[in-house]
Image 1 (cartoon, one colour):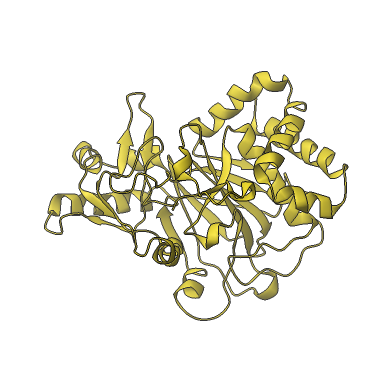
Image 2 (image 1 turned 180 degrees about the vertical axis):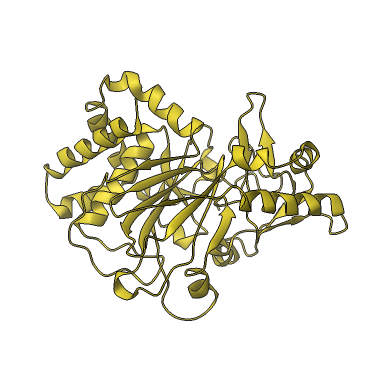
Length: 347
């Protein structure tokens, strides 16, 4: 089983789904992502070389590789101008097809497509674009981004926040859909195995100790203030986790991680060494229009090079999160009685 098999099966499933009805009907189905994911999952399995027997092989891919680059998986049609903000994602044949494709991929990988209520009002899909206007968000949207994991201040998968046990884990997957990239701006990845290979054993041990605080990344702060009444910071936690199986997990953002004890020079030095190791581990790849990049948010940091001024046809990616929700409790989802919002996790 290769990524080409996965891509071909999903592409065929989407084509079968599009034959069933109108764009309006497809958009209506997209509004209930869990049901649509199940439907597309069944269609895709029929297109795999050995049907459902290959699912284990497919899922092993995403746990063993830092990322999966599915090239040319989406057929692109007419699209609107590149949006000027994170939301909303415009509704047209191409973006509907792209979002449905991600639902199918995540489902085949054993993941639910999820969002968080405190980020972009819980929108399941968001635009990654140069944001219009002035201010921190607009500037940050055009600058280069150093290596990070998304939702770094949320717990590792399978763990609970000691102060706020309702808080759901950070995503297992960060999935990027390529719609436009006229200047071929590279996405950067830093595979964790490569990063760790550049660290000495003492630093690795310090990073596994509960000596750090992680502030929320900027996209979560406004939502936390509105929904929680405060900005929740993760205190006295490790940044690196190594399981007995030798699987590596990391949560990290250069701008959000500090030593819990400001006088702790050992942890401060470990952070500096981690930052240097990330910088020396950078690999570049270009997400072309029609590509999908599935990044393992546990074992691969990601970022990008700076964007140019490209106007209405500037770089346009759509981002989604995937999470294995088998151990997720109901209290870690929002409870407002609307099944269309079940994918929104707390906080």
